[in-house]
Length: 439
Image 1 (cartoon, rainbow, N blue to C red):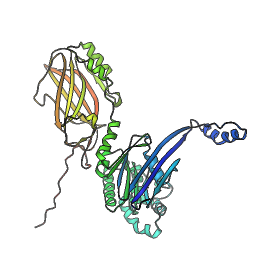
Image 2 (cartoon, one colour; image 1 turned 45 degrees about the horizontal axis):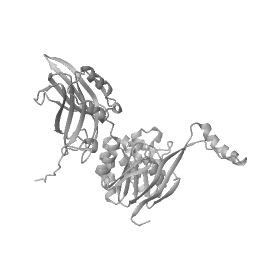
Image 3 (spheres, rainbow, N blue to C red; image 1 turned 90 degrees about the vertical axis):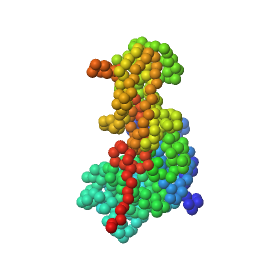
Image 4 (tube, helix red, strand yellow; image 1 turned 120 degrees about the vertical axis):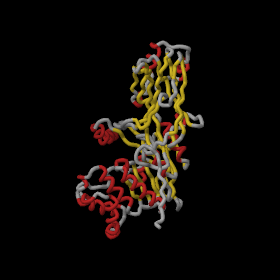
C-alpha cells in the first residue's frame, strides 16, 4: 500500500446470516453435519443479507471523508470492518495508523467500571502506556466535562454523558485515524460544537477522519470528499462534495402526491365541477410525509413546484443554500369565479410551530380565481440554517369577516437547507467578529 494511503479497501463483501427463529440457528449448527454424515445434500436454515457488495476505495492520510446513505446502506458495517470489529466475507482491508473509533453508544465501555477506569482501559486498547494516559487524563476529563461522574460507574450515565466521555477519550489520544459513526447526534448542541472544533484541530494536524452522519450540512462544511452508499455498494465517491450530497438528497426526497404525469395533463381543462375537485383533493396527498388535507374544494391547490433562481426544479437539485432565491409555484384549480382569496405558505421544523410564513394579503396583492387552472408564483429569499423543514400551504376565501377553507395542505412537501456553518436556531445570520484594539 502506498505510503500516503491510510485506508485501502478492495472488493469488500460482507454477508450476514438472517435466522427467522432461534430454532433455525440451532438447526444450522447441527443439521449440515448430520446431512453430510448420511450423504444428503446440505440445507441452509438462514437467509443471506449482503450488507456490502464489492466495495473498493482508498482514503489518503489527512483526508476528511463523509459517508452518507439511507438506513441499511452499509455505512456502519463498512466502518466496523475497517476498525476490525467485523470480519469481511471476502475482499481485503488494509489500515495504516492508530485508529480511534466512536462507533456506537457505549461501545468499548465496561458498564461496571467508573469513567476513570474506562479511560485507562480504552487508552490501553489504543496502545497508550499508563504514563501516557496519566499525562492526558486531565485533558480528557476537562473535555468530557461530566464533573464528579468521572468516578461513577458508566452504567449510571445518560446517553449524552456516554458520548462526552467516549469522544473525549478518542479525540485526546492523538489518533492517526478518527472514525465517528453518528454517535455525536445524541450530544447537546454545545458539546457538538466543541467536538467539531476538536475535529477541525485534528484535521489541521493531518489526522484522517471518517464520519458517518445524516447531517449533510456537517458533510458540506467539514468533508473534503463524500462517499454515498446505497444497497451495500458505492454509488458516488467524489471530492465534489455538494454534487455527492445532491445525489443522496435526490434519492431521499419524499415522493410527490400520488398523481401521474398523464393524469396531470388530463386535469388541464376549461372547467371543473366541485365534485371533480373534491375527488382530486381526496386522492392526491403526500402520504410519505403524512399530509393532512381538508376544505370545501370549490377551489384546490393541485400542486406546488419549487424553482431556483436559474429556473431549475428543486426536485432535480434538492438542496437549497441559505439565502438563495426560491420561487414557489402554485397550480390552482377552481370550479367558479371566486374573489377575496387568501393563499398562504409557511415553513416549519419537523416538530414545532411555523418559522416563516406569508400570504398575498400581507403582500397587498389581491387574488381572484377564474374557472379552470391558474399558476401563481411566490418568490422569496430565505436565510434559514441547515436542516430539514416542512412546507405547508392553504387557500381560503375571506368575505364579510367569514372565512371559508377551500384547501388546506399540511404539510405538502419537504425542504432541505444548508448554510456555510452551523448556528443555534433556524435563522442563518452569521456574525462578523472584529477585535478592537484597546486605546
